[in-house]
Image 1 (cartoon, helix red, strand yellow):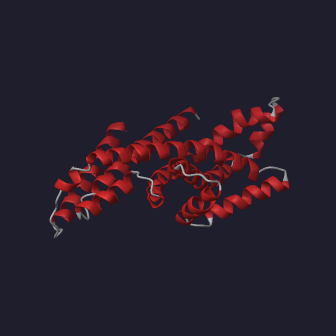
Image 2 (cartoon, rainbow, N blue to C red):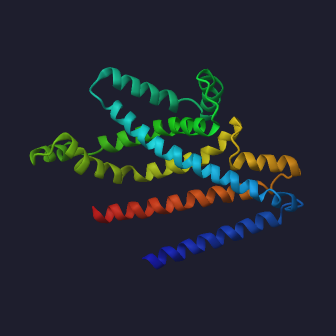
Image 3 (cartoon, rainbow, N blue to C red):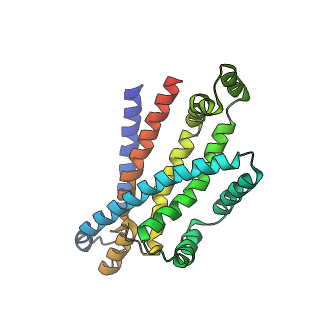
Length: 246
């Protein structure tokens, strides 16, 4: 089975390479890589900054998503209303608008000028709302009989969540969480509107300086693929492992 999957993966990659070759070979465009190559150091610096922003936002968004999920299922009506209101507000407005308002209005009001920290917080606040709904749906999908069985053997509510509810919920929401993580990494490209010199901003600077159109965007796409493909592969392995343990 494993060799079959490897063969299918290799065939898919070969087909993709052939398709890209056919498309670019017919493109009436004069490539000029000399100017872009001179900016390779800045590209690497922007890529490293993208990794830092993405990792920070991933960690904070998971924590925020867990808190919001707990708040939206709370028996306290005020806490439940505030959590639901935040989730709906964030999910109902574009990320670009949130970035602009968060940076030029909210951060300015609190005299915050650290673009890296602001970028991490704004990305986390956006992704956390989506993760909260994913986690809430996974937790509520666990059958009530599982909770009653945990109580019957003497588990406390905390032990029931730790040993019964959360493991089952995680298995069910892991694909959706992986998709949200990949989207978060790609959404970090929007931080260029704040002047944060991550990978996308560095590519724009290089394109403006060298008058290139496409040469910078191909390394940009490759840089994000290097980040997202291992994440997708790791979550697939983790999903298979959890399914096996189940």
